[in-house]
Image (cartoon, rainbow, N blue to C red; front, side, top):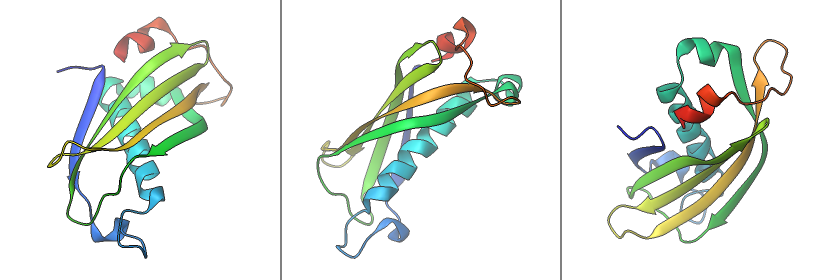
Length: 130
């Protein structure tokens, strides 16, 4: 298993479709956040997840093409860098049938102590998980 990259395939559900009959832009953001959470849960122990949390500082999403109900998409996410209290995570969502890149995105996260909710330097142990 490659801990550095998290991949997930899914079929676009009817609930993700907007009035223009394609995936609503907010659905892509939700999928990115869900993938980040799943990657964190897969790699970090229950103890680590109990002691630390991540808060979003900003999102950047480039919409490259449209996706539609029933399309099978794959999201890939990985941590590009972690330094101090900040970590930048990247995402790519592609259409598996065509190989076309649908979305390229990144999120800047801040690492916090779960109890105090104060920014905390990311330990080497956690940087090595991703």
